[in-house]
Length: 284
Image (cartoon, rainbow, N blue to C red; front, side):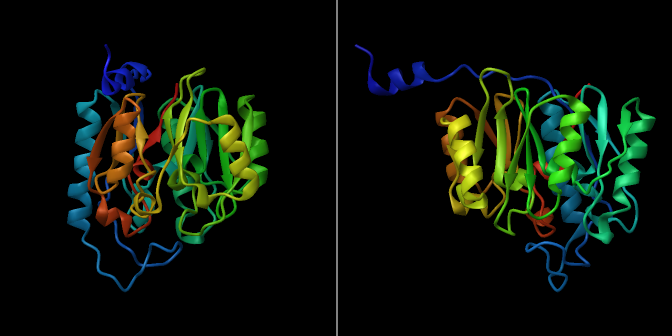
């Protein structure tokens, strides 16, 4: 006789890790001197050296997982450059550049496009305001695209024309989750076994209908874990690097056959970013 726990274990999907190539930026100039999202408060002190140490933990975690990690040089005066995910979106060796909403971050767009060009990617200069992989997530063959606070809906049309893939627009409604990658995590992007996690309260009614219909087995993350940017995570299909304080999300990941790996990026959270914000996937 198979006990219930054993039966549950046997029913889990087999998760498989796939080596990832990512781009990161060391937070040598990180601080909070302006406010462009609800997480930022220039009145609160920040510790750049602590931010660097925490970032290095994430960097070492990726190396330990066998990832190829490339680095872009940080630029003085661009404290948010550490959030590399916003610097573009890369599929099939084509890098769609970022065009930032706020003037404080706009110089990051050319900096990242310069790096892409110097490293052999075909660079597509954007016509529309967009903040890269902060709002664009590849799930299987489909691109989920966020709008409402940063990236414009016209950028979604650009994506579809550029990559020839289905693009699904999702409207974000909670200013604390202003980028799609703060409200939704891609756990398995393998075509045919797509799996995500998300926070329902971050989306409008139409978006929730889409998510529930397309991903009925999605992990639903609670408000407490979302509030420490637990969903701002990065998965290789088996190992999911998450905020160490997102305890219930970690529990759910284990129940679904994943290996959650917690890291502390609490200092970078003061700028409104977490694991995924620091991670731009490079898909050749």
